[in-house]
Length: 429
Image (cartoon, rainbow, N blue to C red; front, side, top):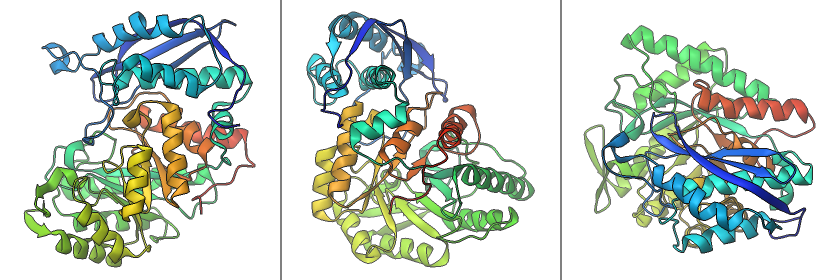
C-alpha cells in the first residue's frame, strides 16, 4: 500500500479544534475528530523558533494577546471551513484528505488557513485511517510509505544555544547519539545518563544548569569547543566511550542565525568566510567524534553547502533543514546540486502527512538519508515517534531526555519496541 492506494475509508462525524499551550507557553492548535464508530482521535501542531524562509506558514492572530501569537483564527478556520468540507464524506486515503485541505486553503504554503491548523487535521486523519485499518499508527505509516519499520537512533539535544537559549553560544544544538546501543531502551538510558553527567559538570563549573527551549542545558559559554569538551567528558563520566560508532556527537549550528551575508559567518566574535567555515568544521570533525552536521551554512548560501559537501566527501552526514523545509522539490534540487547527503523531516514545515511522506520518498530516491525532528515549541503529541519508526529512516531528534513534551516521544519509541521486539534498531544503512 502507498499513501495514494485505496484503503478502508474514514468518515468523520465531527471535527473541532481548540488552542492549547506549547512547551514555550505560546498557543498552538489541537484538533479532535470523531469517527462514525464513535472513536475520537486527536492531534496537536508544534511550532518552531528557528524557521526557514520557505516553510509552510502558521496562522497567528496578531494583536496584544500572547504577544500576537494567538491561534483563535486558526481554530475558527478548522471549525468554520475545514470541518464542513471534511465531515460526513467518505475519504479513501490520506492523500485525498490532504489534497482537499490544500485545495480549500488555496495557497502553496497554507498561509490562509494556517499550517498549524492543516497539519493537526492531517495528523488526526492519519490516526483515523490507522484505526479503521486496525493497525498501529507506525505500521499504517509503513504501509502508506512502502517502508520497512525500524527503531531509530535518538539524537538528544543536551546543550542549547542560538535562538533556543539565552546565552552567547551561536551554535544552536549540541546532540549526543548512542549509535552503538543494542536497542532503543539502551539508547534512551545512555542519553539520560550522559545528560545527568553533563548536568553535574555544568553545575560544578558554572554554578547553574539552566535550560534552553528543547531541554538542553544553557550555561554561559560562547565557543563550540568548550561545549564539545564538556560532552566528551560527560560521555566518559557516564561510563561510555565517545566515538562515531559508540556515543557520537551531532551538531546543528543553525547557520541562518549567524550568517552575515556575502558568504560571511560570525561565531564567537570571529568573522569567517565560507572557506574558513569549512576549515573550522573540518577541524572540529577531526578533534571530536562528530557524525552529523545540520545547517552548517545558511539556506541562501548554496556555495557554502557545496564547498562543505566537497570537503567532507561523504565522510560525515550533512543535513539540510532550513535548506529544504521538508519540500520534495527543494530536496530534489538540492540533491542535484550536491548540497547535502541528508534531509531533516518536520511535518509542520510542509503542512500535511502525505507531503511529508513524499519528502522522505524524494530523499530516498536521491540517495539521501533522513532524520525526523521535533520543533522547539512542542506538545505531548507523539506522532513523530510513529513516523520515524514507520518510515524506517533510523534517526530522530526530539530534544533532551528531559521535559514531558520531549520524553513523550522517547517513551513512545520504547513502548513500540516493547510491543514489537522484532524490529531492528539503528541507522538506516
